Length: 303
Ligand SMILES: N[C@@H](CCC[C@H](N)C(=O)O)C(=O)O
Image 1 (cartoon, protein in one colour):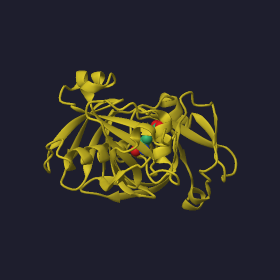
Image 2 (cartoon, helix red, strand yellow):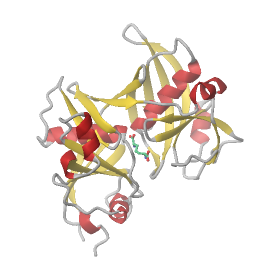
Image 3 (cartoon, rainbow, N blue to C red):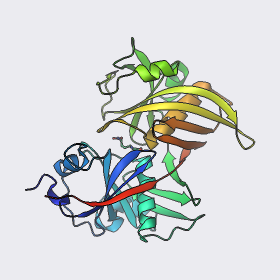
């Protein structure tokens, strides 16, 4: 068997959203038997193609998880089958879904003119993505803070020790619906000092693991007639390591900083990540994520 298993010899495409990068694997009829080891090998940055994650492009009707998305919206023809670079499956990927829809559009698999929208299936359910001619906006669905109002009032519901930072820090859990823990730092010096190659310690230990966002709130600007919050973020992704962006993580970061700011805080947030910038809009119980998507290469893995 070759190191890339079922991925060997297949036509693959690479792409990224704010430098959170992915391998896209077309498998319209769900014939590929993809195992975790193949994903790990392909995502390896030294011995493989290198990526933060892998996305199988498959029809919703071709796999059992697609049934929920189709029940929510029968137009969700295509399903984003997302895997982290360690081979684990995640509920949602906010940067990945923009890259996925960009791929569908570029390859003529969906009709998506500027100003149009399309619904795709994900493990979090059906998600609508619109295109403005430049950037994609994803309706990310319902967010939650498992610690509730009590955690928001206290400012945290998890104690986190991050390598490179002194002492314990308070983290606020946010579900997007994948698990996130957001920790606010006082300044960009501390943000740079955090060592995200090490493993943070959490108390209590998150049962499903967690993505960790370190954030520095940067205040507010005046947008188009409304205040716009700004926040800088670094992220340690569950199942991956430090990445240059995480879409669900930017939503979690904006939601946590908004909650900490209290009543009257902006609903729109510009989140600055090492790989670029995205916009998060809080619409009551739901949130949207707007950002770019790019394809970088068509490639074949050799055996
Ligand atoms: N990069 C993604 C999130 C991918 C999943 C995450 N690592 C997890 O395991 O929850 C994003 O852009 O949201």
